[in-house]
Image (cartoon, rainbow, N blue to C red; front, side, top):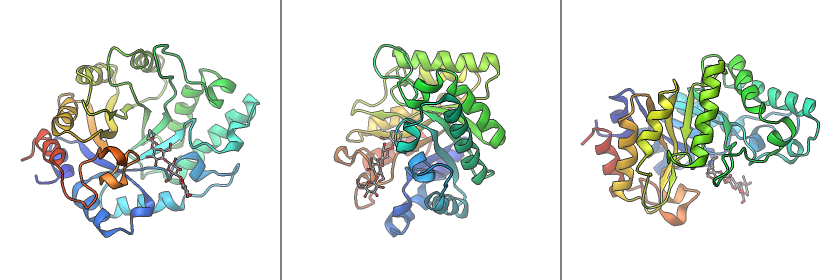
Length: 303
Ligand code: G3I
């Protein structure tokens, strides 16, 4: 097949991209989106600051635009993200009482997931809950500090009740290298969840790479997580300067793991990227395919 999504579909996988609602009126953007991609992730529109700016007052207009576009074009949707320390409204961060915060988190998850029920392939239920560096510790956040370690499993149990058909993912960055303390900490959490029956279906590896691309152990990491009984996905791929080999190596790591169900890049054109200064994506600012595009397509088994 001649496009990323169609080629990925030949092995039962998807190839997706982050989408910004504000760009859906750009014809160059939507032409590439609808030609190449069979999955989308709203880049900001499903985050807490976009959906529940004040307590109990929900708005899904921008996210609905993306989901509507995706539905009309046969694209799966990854929901991103329900519980995250960043892009969090100040009123949530100011809660100091555990009973209140637990109820606020459960209500946020349930209301948002219910709104999109039946339309979401997988949700990033919890995002970036582990600290950087060698400690393997949880990241400090209002959730961690007020609710303690149990907030993550509480979020997954709440999510399962809200939409039993959606796959429930834990998503993070810098967990691609098997030897990293952060990777090991997330692995232990997933292993613990699976052993105790906490509902988790997938792990998202953001994969924001430097120009050397994925660590040599990336395939091993994906395979080891998959062996716990979860799907694995590459969820936010971008690579500084987009070297073709680095993109090929990343795609191959997924193709070599049966339970790696899909790959999403974090934007379409370099000019759409949060790292636009590094030109990390598959299309240039004018929407032309870069060398990395051909490398990714080939690695998916295309021509
Ligand atoms: O919406 C406001 C707009 O009203 C205002 O005029 C403008 C001025 O700066 O800011 C706009 O908000 C920006 C928002 O993107 C929407 O464009 C924020 O400043 C900006 O910080 C925000 O950046 C996003 C970032 O997450 C925030 O953490 C990026 O677009 C988005 O690509 C990035 O995505 C994250 C994933 O969700 C999680 N993993 C890491 C990844 C990269 O940071």
